Amino acid sequence: PFSPRELIARCAALLRRVDRATQIAKNLENERTMTFGNLVINPRQRIVTIDNEEVHFTPTEFDLLATLARKPHAVFKREKLLEKVWDWPDASGTRTVDSHIKSLRHKIGSSWIRTVHGIGYAFEPVISEN
Image 1 (cartoon, rainbow, N blue to C red):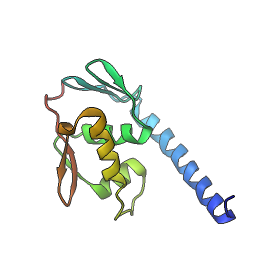
Image 2: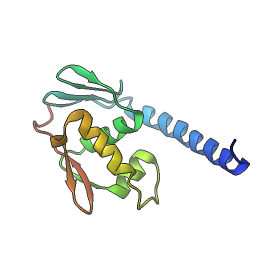
Image 3: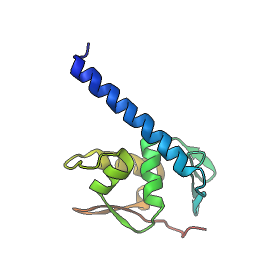
């Protein structure tokens, strides 16, 4: 059983996620498919394929990958990723980004995401976007 305060916090978090998902869906309506060699990211359908095989991603993993892939080679600070992907504007000191990056690397391969120590991460496509 949850305390009233915890229940309210959980409901507020759920409502934030629903609002975020609605906004993301609206923003992706006109977004084009990103192709990086054998890695294809389809934002409208929220599908990632490698060698024409669909790879399952959680919604957060997908959003993180798409955010990085929209600006190849650009270094994103952890705080910026927390703001863009998790909608946590003042977050710091959390390892959430790191654990999600680890999961992405496990699914797509470690060579796609470069760690910039002490700063953040960059998407490093092996083959440039078509």
